[in-house]
Figure (cartoon, rainbow, N blue to C red):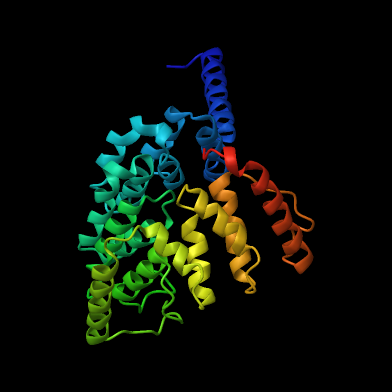
Length: 311
């Protein structure tokens, strides 16, 4: 039985049209890079929750992280579901904490009990990164981390493969409370159980001595520590406390003799006040730029302090 030539031609035309349509769709479909660098940031900026959830449900880590904003409280049920996914639970718990730290901090500190050392390490890193601490939050987080100083399980990552999790916990505590004794070096450091136990004991003593003090007062005190490392840490942590005293001290730290402290103080001021004074040379950290920045900040803060409102 012969098939009419017209039918064959029609079928071929339809297949060609379908192939062209598929090709056009594939070419117009955004790449993963475009999604991460353009679409998701734009959705976060405009508050487009539907777009963020669409990509978060497809497993885009950037979208999950961007959901960590008080504007996206409606995303909490989805993020809570992700807590059962080992690949996403740290990102989900961090996003939940950023949405509502009062209610969701226990979800993040709870990951310090996880059987997977990579998840415990991720939770510690997340605790260090969360902005806008209150005193009670910092104390809860610090105590949760201190409880794991004697945990000597290995952690993942190319630079930290040989670090016991206790070392990272100690480092996180130093960051949270601006302590000066951060361990130095990378990779090959290996603490003994006895040494970790001694550090755990020293932190317990420290907590007993300071438990009635506001964390902000501790940070302000540490910002005057003889160690530049402690002053640098304190500058970073002060950006999380919306208090006029934080801004006062950060402006003063712009005149610190150490090179890193003023840089960290300037970054903290920008985060805390949502303000950036004009700079003479933003590309290089020179003494001319440093002096101009300090003068600009001092002039601005003198003018704005009395009526200043944190955003």
